[in-house]
Image 1 (cartoon, rainbow, N blue to C red):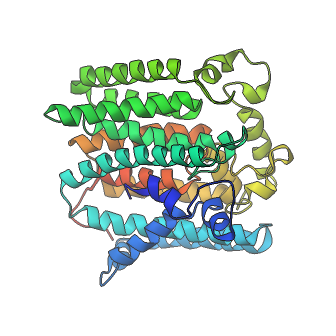
Image 2 (spheres, helix red, strand yellow):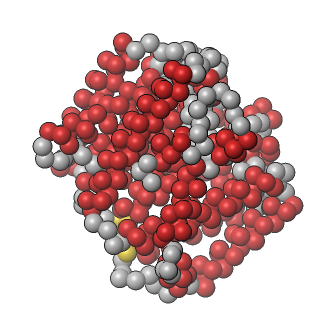
Image 3 (cartoon, rainbow, N blue to C red):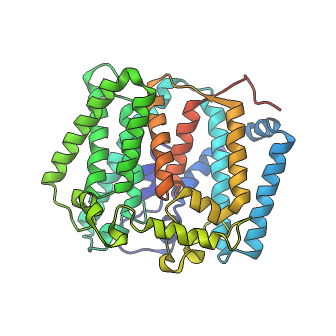
Length: 398
């Protein structure tokens, strides 16, 4: 899973401007990560009974809530959704994510902390390699101006590369307390690179998420405040210096896009990028079918007319209501409540600082962007949560 930034390019072979059928299906629907998760599930569940043990840990109310949620999805799929293929594919991905989380939790309970630290190290290196592949692609196939926005390997828009920048910045936090120069140096490389690419790509979303991640790390790791401040200041100094000497390839890139947003009069170029209007219009459509929503992955065809084609409404709460309605909202709240009763958060090891940072930054990120729409941030978000949770008892309650 730490290799998924690179695999998101290699599996669909997402290079160059020409798109064949295979690439359109895999890259256009962001299927690379679900494919990896599905393969891992085959390994997790081979000769094992993790799903059975999970179901044994549920009670009748759990099963009732799950049944109501699935029946709601089935109803919307049959009677409301206008793109059944996208809905079916989205539901399959959702099931794969859920099975992956169940199997991974079962595996992680048996592993040692050094493996989780290794995960963040490999993830950070993988983001570096991802960026190198992006550079190689653009050097071989020179991009047009629009390509700088929409033809970015592994994602459908350069803004979604912000998920990678948040993850590498968080990965550095797992290494800042390591003894010896090599670990600390790699930590500063990760932090500086994540922040530098955030500024260079003009990604306001990932910048806010990184600042939130750092703030949460400072809050929960008070003994490391000086180290965290040093990490941020070194990363910020390097990233700003790099961007001052690295020209932005077009107007939607660079620090100037971030700094000048507050001075724009056009709503689409302000810091909000038209989000307030998008959210309001999306919620008005949600009210047409508030109980069960309009279906999974239907926003592109059923969203506001002005933004038809957008993958999502750039907000997870709005996305949740639009897709699965009030039933989905209460199902999620119930699931969170059950997790709180079964698990507790334990923060002790260095890898948990990185996990907490990504979880915290991602929790803010999801409020104003499609963070929990794309499989990559969903996967790393899931892994981060599992790194932080320990059961309150030795076994799941009945």
